[in-house]
Image 1: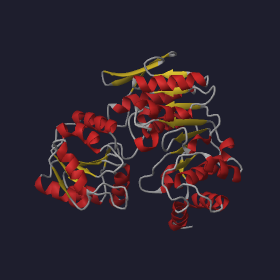
Image 2: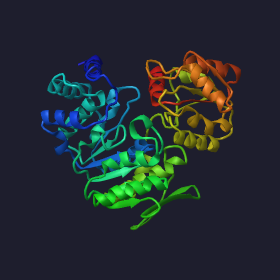
Image 3: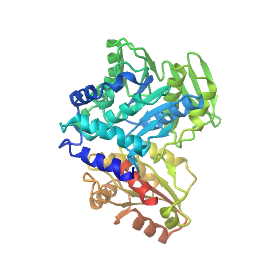
Length: 424
């Protein structure tokens, strides 16, 4: 098989529904029934929803479980450079042959009926998971929770809800409470739910849904606490205290993500060695990732080059905290965003920490903001801004003026993926 085999099937799948997002579970149930309900034959499932930190939290849970010698399936979205990144079978990215097989099988079983790209590819992932032995399955929600395709799991071993904030308002609602209600839709009867730090209005909704389903809540600030002390991470829950290294993933916000992961691991019975592995062995691309090799790095000459895929207001705050904590160095942004995001909400926290922003459009994305629109948004929050044709030309222009700067490419996971492909 060649790389084109799975790509050709994925391209066909894009044409099966006129909308990219259309939240309902009806189509998923129909296809899962046609492929003999693989969701009922999975290794124990840990189901993760939330607005911010889902991917990083999943990465740390996976690192912890693997540190304990467990074989772990993992499903995440979107991918950055290749679709295969979404499906990890017992610790390894799915092979091209296996991916082609399950995609083709789902495409045939669907019989040309309406189904979204995310729905049918999620069914393919579940099929692959059901056919491969493992100890655990980590499922990251794509959008929301209640009507997300991953919510076809009837009884996970554990549910996890990371911090909830405003995002995807057109699909999930325009208040924290409404969005929290959608995220809380993954809570199942009697299944414990680990809950990360939340705004009061989000926590009230989550607790109400959990109570209605008889689901025990393992909540930050009530049942577990996490903080830093003398350059170490301290986690405490009802079974005791852990004194651990700081997370390998960069940023103060990763401390709370680590706390969520540790609470999940402790509930699953993992020991201190597994908890330490969660912090020290986790990797997650495009989350303040330092790029060290490749054509873009060569073009950067002596400049530091970083990549981050955060894209909402909360991510802007987290990124600003990271920049404030890095060694002092003039920092310039290369930014591209989607027109579905709160662009000024993302940029405003960054303004005090950067010298300039160069706006670009995201190649190949229909929903990209134009470079002109992104430039205008940056100027509206007080950032000196210009625009360029792409990341490479923007980078060359920045380092031509000062080769000893820090450059951060940011604003969208889609831009991050395009950057990783360009950097080869």
